[in-house]
Amino acid sequence: MAAKKFAFIGAGSFGFTRKLVKDILSFPAFQDATIALMDINAERLDYIYKAVQHIIACGKYPAKVIATMDRKEALIDADGVITTILQGEIDVWQNDIFIPKKYGVDTNVGDTRGPSGIFRYLRTVNPMMDIADDINRYCPNAVFLNYTNPMAMLCRSIQGKYPNMTASGLCHSVQGTASMLAKWIGAPENEISYTCAGINHQAFYTEFLWNGKDAYPLIRKAITENEEIYKEEIVRNEMFLALGRYVTESSGHNSEYNAWFRKRQDLIEKYCLPGTGWNPGEYAYIVSSYRNRENTWKDEIDKFMSEPADLTRGFEYAAYIFNAIFGDGEMFKFNGNVRNWNLIDNLPYGCCVEVPVLASPRGLEPIAVGKMPAQCAILSGTSAQIEEMVVEASETGNKELVYQAICYDPLTSAVCSLREIRDMVDEMFEANKDWLPQFSK
Image (tube, rainbow, N blue to C red):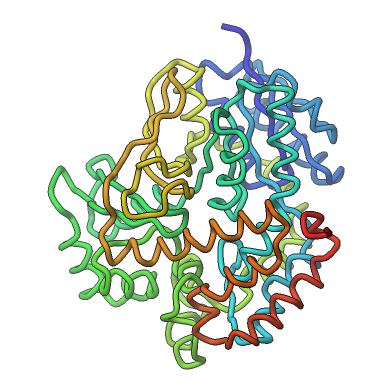
């Protein structure tokens, strides 16, 4: 079998690139692959090039790596493409967090939905569609996997323009949360199975089974009887106790997606301050995290290259999907982001949903899951309808539709009047005017 080529667009995203390269090379079918790294930041590109060389050397793989700032060079004849881009430096996207705060919208990460996620999409969709155009031009048969947020809206745009492209968006929240829940109830992960459906970061486990039996009573018991477990994911645990199904993304993220936790200071202090868990939800967590890494990322990479690389295959989906489609052909089921063509009955037709998908030599085959529980579909469906409006607004250059979409964001509408939302959106458009060519007309 001919050696495969994998193009990483936005390769300077060190965490993702190192993990995914390691995973890809762990499959026998890909150990002689060409890893093509592309980024627009020369310094970061040089560092990740050396880091990938280190992985190859530690594994004694016959693979080779190239680094380029030319996207065409990276994409020509690629079999697999991974995107992990960020449009604009922190001085640009921090406005997504800071401007809404002036109007009372308290944001933790802001990369997925709400006014922050919407403006991140409006900036990011332009280079993302340029990438999709180049994939269609230079490697139209490649498998295209996106890790860039806001996941749902970006994948909706890509799949809307290129419906026949083998493409999906990937997030580790589904398998990561399943692992967390298994740990809470003392279950070996290989004995857990589940069905998970919804939209990215707002998907719910419609069933969660341990050896074929409903494990939700055990999860409820763990949350209500163990204070450490309750506090570890306090927002998500409160949502579960109310809705009866567990949501996939962290408490910090989910506290932004509804009207229940960040609309008053007393609620923020109760549910959204630093504490246990990965990301409990403090204001501007993502900004402080990025600022801290500005001065540490070089040391991190230097340390990585000074030690033997851990070559253990991880749980990110990408390498398994590539292997299933054009590697050894072992089928792989994962949760991916695809258009809702009769996959979830009570979410908008054609919106981007996150559902089980089967990867095999036949490509990607989404699996219909029927109806979500009504109490979950209301929450996910509101977000999905907002996302449809925003995608249409970007495609048509309609600023008013962006404003109208944000009017219905649950958290924004809980803390702002319609006039305040208008002023906030106008200010965000002004701050982003150099990044939004689709609205210039």
